[in-house]
Length: 192
Image 1 (cartoon, rainbow, N blue to C red):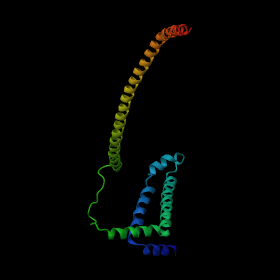
Image 2 (tube, rainbow, N blue to C red):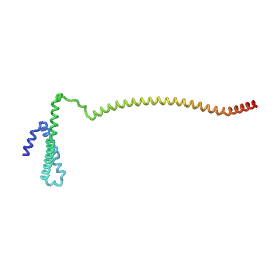
Image 3 (cartoon, rainbow, N blue to C red):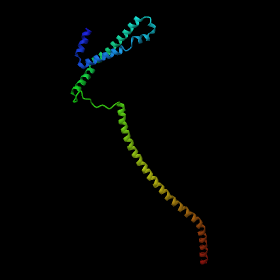
């Protein structure tokens, strides 16, 4: 009864789901049988004397693994979402405007390398833009440095003049005091 129910479910599925199921079952069978009997016997050395038992254990392991993977596949297919997805994919491929034999564009060689080369192009362009900005800023900084040098030189000249005037004033100031005192005396004598 379970077998007839399985056959009924299988017959209701679209062709692409049947193809998917058959492909996956072949893959599962290859996976289950990928551990050779000799390797299995090498792992279980304590049963070395009982070769027939090891063969039975190996066959049981392969069968159980295959059945469990098939059970998982049946659960996935029973959900229906995979069948729906495969159906949508089939519709899209039939609605495609391109000839199925037409080879679509693909990046040359390694995809990651191609993406890296595209990123490298962008990085080079951005680097050139940043380099121009840096050069402009350096030019502005150089202009500002030149202005600062000119203004510092002018400030130094003014400072030198002020210092000379102060020195001259410090020498002339006592002389002016003497002259002022002398004039004061002359004025006093005139008015007496």
